[in-house]
Image 1 (cartoon, helix red, strand yellow):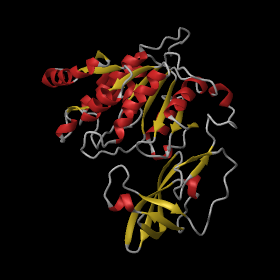
Image 2 (cartoon, helix red, strand yellow):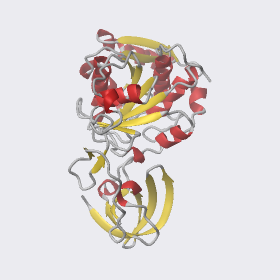
Image 3 (cartoon, helix red, strand yellow):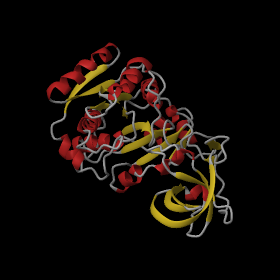
Length: 361
């Protein structure tokens, strides 16, 4: 850790579980982020201890100084919680009540739960796909009850996401589950498997979206990227009797050749890691780029059901999303194919819901 100490000079935006602030460190004004549930709510004039490692490295998603403590005004002890430790054995480890642990009121439901009952689960690589997937779902089937399962491949605190609370406010998410080392969802779970079961059996999701939190680790190698979890999620869905829908990471604008067309992340995760079958959604994009995408998807036929889905009307649906769409710094017009591919996955997944008593609103 790279430690710094400073004084709070400004309070910025806040959203559920997070507070932006400006901290004066010597002669430098530093943009920082605090999680009040962990460290307390900072006030102007407070002395704070910071971890500036990601900020010093100039990371995009993680480019904040993070408040480690407000040492002169410590928060009160939180209420008694469960026995699950998230961010384990780090200085900011947090005790939470897991939906699947014995003291949980959900334990009776989950103790012998072993099946998702065919519920569709959209699996995506990046957190930025989440609102686009939901746009496709709600365009095809308004009123669908959707739960988001956040893995620990990116940010560990759910509070780091500004997208999730905005989607909640818009009525586009009925609930959230954080799994692995991630924490801060409506329910906590130990594994992807119990997270999926919690989403369907406890939170009564008709459709689930699973992806990592904000931030994505990639090394430019075939296997060294956090999105490998996408293939592992497909396996969990298939093992539990769900209907996996794979959202392809597609880009016509990414300057890196390995991510243009269908990203190597998707080809590796779905083509090599995923051993259970999924519906791999290939958007029917126009022109030569569309042909390139369809050709690149051909190897996935060996293991999966490759489904071509039209993108007609999805641009307008995405433009009307309740949150700003952004991936790798590119908005809807800057990387239209990326967002249309995710929305196409949501459009297809909505057609797989089998419940007959749903009333669209």
